[in-house]
Amino acid sequence: MSEGHACGCDHCEELMQPYVDRVLTAEEHAEAERHLEGCSYCADRYRFEAELRIYVRDACCEEMSPELKARLVALKLPEA
Image (cartoon, rainbow, N blue to C red; front, top):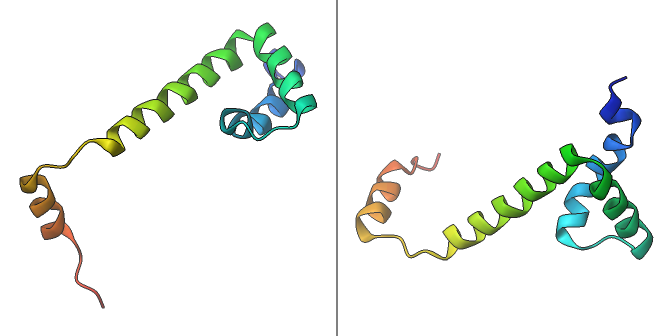
């Protein structure tokens, strides 16, 4: 067993998505916070996940050019 797994990283991994989604109970949230404060590996993973969500949210809001829309329509597979 690696040191990361010994310090609770496996459980933190289970809590990561609900933590980012802010759907944990108060107790689970506090547990995740404690782990993230003491584990730079998981803290880095959390920051990456949070930044990725911001990037995706921003990218989804950008208007697509008519040329790109036409190219995407052309790629659509015919329905069977």
